[in-house]
Length: 254
Image 1 (cartoon, helix red, strand yellow):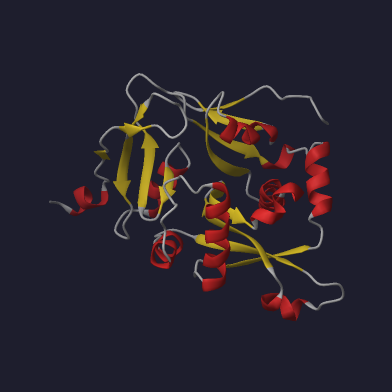
Image 2 (cartoon, rainbow, N blue to C red):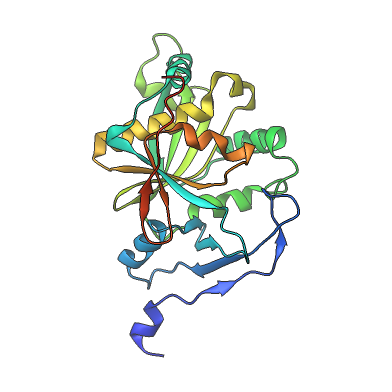
């Protein structure tokens, strides 16, 4: 095998299994392993053209007769929050955010388990251990970071950040043209305050500050209640057969 062949990704297809989003459907994924010998530009190209990353695997839906999964990204510089988003921002105004290296902690894992047990106890992550969580966070060959959100006590100095209650965590990749939100979780008792919405808003603001034009939100499926929230972040683009295409904006709630 030549050096050029080693650098070109080999693709594989998973066996069919029940689709977690569309009842009665089967899903398959096309995937490749992300390794340090692959050119960074190639990995970036995959992750900006529809592939998602899970540890050191990049995958894309590859389902026979179905193209329901659509990649979506927010156009950062034109983003406009609606009333409900602004309420979420205000309700979480006492949270402080800090970017950290992709290094897992027991404190993060405790929050992760509370989130999974409360909201996704029947999902594919239900049995994840600390070792599994460590692999999810650490196994990466690109620029990956965590954002921790902690509740700031009144009058507390920034130097005491690590001692404040941990309320949410987001695992993200920094791509050439945006931030890809890989996975996020939060205190399930704070769901009513719109913590999930707040984390996306905060990453949009972060992308604006560092000059990146997009925030990638993963896949969206029309008609899926689990993914409906993604349409609220506008303007947005969806990946079509040949290119990213801007979708018509919903004028409600502004």
